[in-house]
Length: 163
Image 1 (cartoon, rainbow, N blue to C red):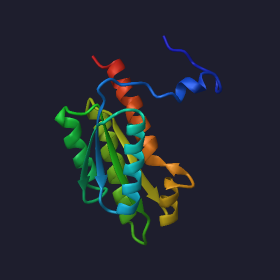
Image 2 (image 1 turned 90 degrees about the vertical axis):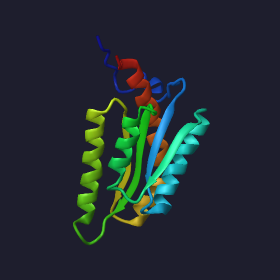
Image 3 (image 1 turned 90 degrees about the horizontal axis):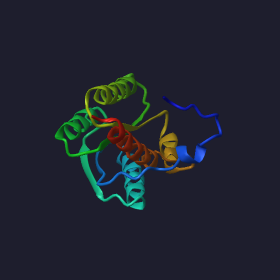
Image 4 (image 1 turned 45 degrees about the vertical axis):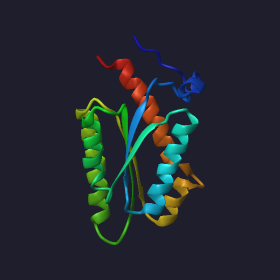
């Protein structure tokens, strides 16, 4: 049986982070667009520290296309309760942007459907550098922080509903 809430009912409960005993998180971070990915990574690490989680492993891959492989390796290792993919793709003048974004999105979706570990998508897909800066600690906050929060919530969800 499930309960459906009205739009404003239970909103504080929806935004409260659960506690996950012994939480372990793997973060795979793209080196490409390092200024942005570094800021996203720092946002995630700051969130985990603030919430009292210390067992965070960070690994680097060259670019966003390689994030799926890195996340797959982490997910299959059995060492992590959640994995975060951090990357940034900024539109250029060729279709390369679309291919890279599609690759990362499809890869993350595939891993979420086939692994017993939630994989969190923290890949900025922006039209220009300013949009990326705004989402990596700028005017629109830090999507890395949001990814860490999602990892905590999804690790809790996985533990609640796993067999």
